[in-house]
Each structure stands twice: as C-alpha cells, then as structure tokens.
Picture (cartoon, rainbow, N blue to C red):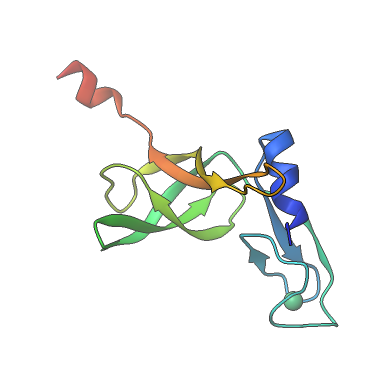
Length: 123
Ligand SMILES: [Zn+2]
C-alpha cells in the first residue's frame, strides 16, 4: 500500500499536512481520517510553511526531536538536523527515507535544519 500523499510530495516538493475542520487540529504526516473525530472529521489539505521556531526539543538516540511551531501556527514534532536551542529558527529540508523496490516510489520525509544566524558568520 502506497499512501497517496507521498506521491504528491514527491512530485510537488511541497509539504502538506491534514487539517480537520471538525476539531481544528493539524496532522502531520497526513491522515485520511481524523484520529479524534473518526468519521465525523472533515479532513482537508493544509500547507505547511517553510519556516518555524523551536518550542522545545529533546535528544533521542542522538537525534534532535523538536516541537516546531510553523508560521501559520501549526505545531509539529519533527527531527531537526543540527544544533538548536529553544527559540531557534528552522526551515524545512527534505530527506530521503528510502526506496520502495516494488514500484520505485521514493519516500520523502521532512526534517528541519537550523537557519544559520548572521552573528556566527561574522564573528
Ligand atoms: Zn477532527
């Protein structure tokens, strides 16, 4: 089974989340059914912004897992490649997760990278 949204991401290089009009929650990765509302949920696509801010983070198995708040208020739990602090600005970057051998579909996921601050460069 190949989830449709991965195909979309592959061709559009755009990150899309699901938004449930019934309960007002954003879901990423996308869901076809709202886990809260189930059949009552009204799922539609919602674009994820390019940049966000780190609200909190934790290091798990050497990976930085951060709660990122995007410009449109969407909060998502995501991996951040690089060193961040609370309040750090980050932007999305695509990473390839792997390949599906059967039909050659490549799975992409979104990770975030810190936006380099000018201070560091000039010092
Ligand atoms: Zn819902």
